[in-house]
Image (cartoon, rainbow, N blue to C red; front, top):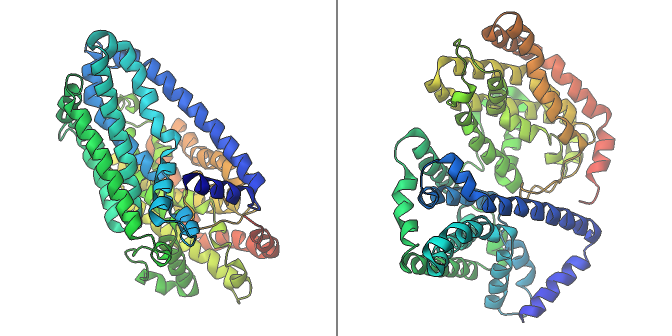
Length: 496
């Protein structure tokens, strides 16, 4: 029966109208996966030397034991964003006269066949062979590497359950943020060192079978948890039903003050909340608010004269405009399924574009407000974020939309964001250049002639001018959409 299910999946792919395109994408992704795995293997081979440089004079085994928990935190995050769920395949098989249990077992096992599953083996086995095997013997190596692999595989089964259960809910977002904050943030902020707390468990695995047994049992328990959840919910009406999402049917009240454009902004917000890809973009924007933690407290980027590093301008633009950049680069592709509706309505195109403008600026404003706590590192960072937010709202938003309107492409909103290139064209790859250059064209001349704060004043002033001239600047992009609306509509009817 397992081979019959595999045969059906193969025929499904072979008979698809987009088989050639899918095959080409699979080959490309396979090549990239092999390339990335080769880098992981090289990192594993040189891991002993890397640890020797990072913690000179300390035992590399001890250093690695205290750092393994942070690897698993990173794995938790990349599994959350990269790991696929077998729900779509489950929907296509449930109507067949095949036992539900066999289908679920097959799909769960097939989801396990992934390059992600062998990353711990490639990264830590070379270190174990080079260091642990000569010093402590084969049993220690088996117990140690077995414990690491079982934890990694446990995360796989846990994530299959977690994403299906909580991905589209506020609880899921809180849990992911909590893991990120308590895991990495606690050590970074000096609250407590999670690595030192968990280190004895990995040290024990070098001399005892107990950690390996515990993690093996955990792996089996989590597999049963995932299997039971899919088995109990493997009904077409349950799988096709969207998870309840907080605020999904509610509006932003202040948008109603902006007339028809405000109504379009409310509709756009509902679009973002109700669809998987747009929700992923919104969540990523929230994560990237922490981007400044990498730079602002790093001595490498501090200056001795009391000023600040020019790289902080890019960080400020990124933090206050991350959603504007991510969501705005696919400006009209989000509406590819209903674009004809707006064409056939009086002032429909203008209301759609202005509504998108309103929503992007509003969320950018929220990003700025959420970034205010960076004042903890100094008042200059608040000034940086204020100036870059004004520049984003007055100038950058028009530049992003102008570039995004170059040959927009159709997109399926229900697909995930990771490794999904629907709606992405040459403009999306090229727009990063002017977005990185534009702020510095304004900032650097004043910074070099006067000082850094003069550069910030220039950014903020130009942003205010752009905000005051919003109607005229936005009308440029509105006219572009109106003049090319039939060509855009035709491109949106293309098969994905």
